[in-house]
Amino acid sequence: MEKDKKEYILNFWFPLILAILIYCIGDVLLKIGNAELGFQLSGIFEEEFWVALIASLPIVSSFILAMTSKLIMGLVLSKNPLGITEGIFLALTAVITFFLGILIFGENLMSIDLVAISLIAIGILLVYNFDIQKEEIEITEVDESI
Amino acid sequence: MIDLDATGFIIAILLLAIFHAFGEVMYKNGFMLFIKRKRSEKGNFNYFYPLIIPILVILFSIAISLGIKVIYGIILGSNELSITAGLFLGSISIFSVIFGKFFFQEQLLRSQVFGILLIALGIILLV
Image 1 (cartoon, rainbow over the protein chains, first blue to last red):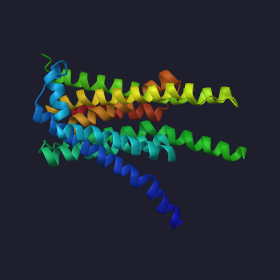
Image 2 (cartoon, one colour):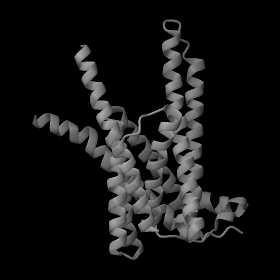
Image 3 (tube, helix red, strand yellow):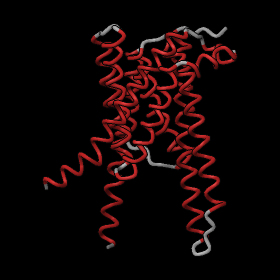
Image 4 (tube, chains in turn orange, purple):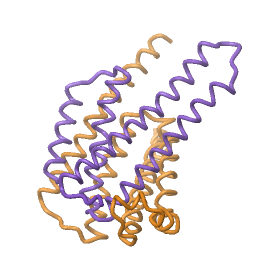
């Protein structure tokens, strides 16, 4: 039982939290890099923007971190149900980036924003909840056939 | 010069979420195609040809992700991280479920519809 719990933490929670934290740090770096560059959306049509983008260490780091997070998520998804994994990933990422925005960039914290981010997180978990039930049913059906 | 007001900001994030969800559909579709061909060819399975399509789909999906990240980064640079990330991630979950129903005929349960409504309400409150 203890061993199963340890394995579950090692195979699910540890890589999942790692992927979430890496993604959140990537988002913070992406904001820092783009705030430094100060381009508008029309910048994507300018050569100057792309040169600055490639030369920007925070932005390039954020891309690498995003890809690393995607890779870790791929490993977690290969061993765990899609519904619960993706749901927790998106919900926790939304909540953590919300607080990182307040802590690092000093963004305004209003009670209505807290309610809003809680609704989004609960909504994400509900949206992906279906897959857990479906996968549980499928697993039971396979077991019965054995 | 494209300059985003509040409405433009919401529309831009929603469009990015749509493209992101579409990239996920392609990713899933590529792997489904690979498995389908593998099953249909049984013993005489040629790994080279069926592998090209999933790899191309995965690479294209990664290219879409990076392209989205570039535009998302520009929007993030001039807007609050807390609001932008919440709006973006919430929208992705809504569109991935809608696309799942549309492209793969996945079932949509009441709890999911309720979840979508909660996210929509959260997004409205957030922006």
